[in-house]
Figure 1 (cartoon, rainbow, N blue to C red):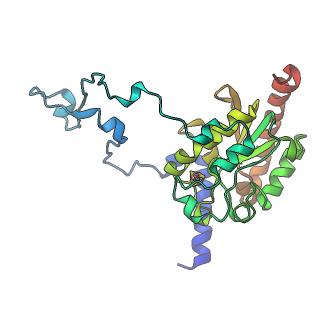
Figure 2 (figure 1 turned 60 degrees about the horizontal axis):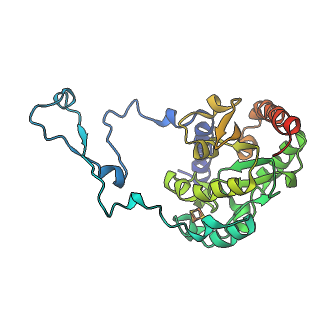
Length: 278
Ligand code: SF4
């Protein structure tokens, strides 16, 4: 298959996923499912060896029982894990310095520049995207390409100057070929975003695109069902709309985006302009 056609197909599939979520790629055709557990959970589980088979076992399903877990003297969970230096950072500048050489996931090996985020450190509004693209990776700044310009225009349309808000991404390093960040990459990077949020203390967050929304809110939903709703992330109100890059590929989604951001502005006026920032 020609490279350009392949690229178009990938972009089209990404757009489908963007709007409808993972469900359309998931498995009515998959008959078998497996139980996946983290190592820590696995250690708590073992196969039921009771002689009397349970109803589940009779129909061929794996049965797990919880191991009787007594607290041992060396159990690590009785002590809090020592904090990494970056967790103690008192401001964004220090945090950036402490994490900018991160290699916690594979994206650290392929990035050109680490993209921490930019904007007003005391912003009432944070805008969160998926991850750096080629332009961002080259410059070390978020949303600087065509999608960045569109984001600036969207913000202007709802009366925000770009430097009035704070812009960051779910992952701080560019996924090769602009692919969607993998769940483990988002998981590895999320503590940095949480720390940024805790330092900035925004009143509202606008998530751009499904990946950013799912990464932050830990939901398994489609963009269609999340748009227009107000979510909560650690006492910060969150709304979701399209990623500007998706709008560039599908200009007919701009009208829906406009409806979303008007609601976001209204929420901002209700929360921030009416009550003032604490
Ligand atoms: S994406 Fe995040 S976790 Fe992965 S290397 Fe970059 S900064 Fe570290």
